[in-house]
Length: 507
Image (tube, rainbow, N blue to C red):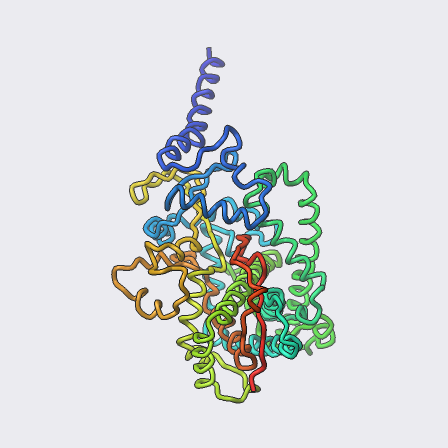
């Protein structure tokens, strides 16, 4: 009798669990609507075995056919794609929806439980620690790094300008941004611009590729299947390099800090061996930070440093590269930006640009905003719905991953007049209109989990762009070298065919 009751109660509990986890989600997902799928696979066949550009086009076509809010099933996982500004506002502005979607789990092998991937109490504590890092006094030190690495960058570009050849600037910007973020985050240099084929640079490329693959490849989304694949072995190899480098810098920096605090001589020879600089880096502040009265462990510090590394180099690479592309295509806009830079900085190209001067580049601000409207560095970001929620008259079921798409919102004619026309001035007029929803433009996300490094990123973009324009005029490729725009929506937005430009030295 007792056994029968226990079995019955167990069956009821299992039924309730399955209903809440799957059948409830099926019911509400059906009301949301979306493309037809198949049993077990869902909509996975839409994306499987498609090269990245086709993946992006498939998503674009699905949005056009299914509207601003629809569901996708990747196996048993429910994704709700959102390009509706009102829904985006309700989700991003609320502290209720701060847990990241399941796709961010693919970052955890590299970033652990850092600021980007953590939630609840740990996220609040980490955010509180890291926010002062981007105070303007500290940003001024970072701007020095931007300027020094930009000098190396323009030197690297000189042979291209002398020959007038057409070349892809994207990989060169990537190396410059990597040098910037290494020195800013860890106080060390990897000399990526000089040693472009370094082990560390290759490992960064490898891990970002694998993270992207797992977001849409249903066979690699699940840890059990992924652990059996060759990608898992490739990931382990890359992580050994990435974590090994960060750990070595943390240990050396911690030893140097201990020596300094005890009044002993600095370990100059040891620091020199790994290229440590004397500027205060992001790592230095973490080494002196405390949570609940205790210092951070090496693992906690590594998670935040690696997060800063991940978020801070690929995103600015994308923004700067697409900005240069648009300046090449619009010489009139390029001339306005150049004139503004000269009016603030002057004719002497050897003078560094400080933070105060960067803040005076108001027209360049508009150009950056317009670039990020059309080419947001992060083309999508996600939140996890932890309980059934009514948002904009739609019930979002518990367990659903909400995928917000700033790329498609920025190109929606319902939100922007003539959206495919590059017009920076719109941000001096359209975006100030009272009737406009600010959540139609969210390249840095918004609300409680907005990008904490936004000021850092904008200062770096301005610094590098101004340095390039002081030395070179940016020209488009020859007509026979022109290719239609095509995108790869990896972890960041990338151009399928690179960013082909030409350069001409300024007199």
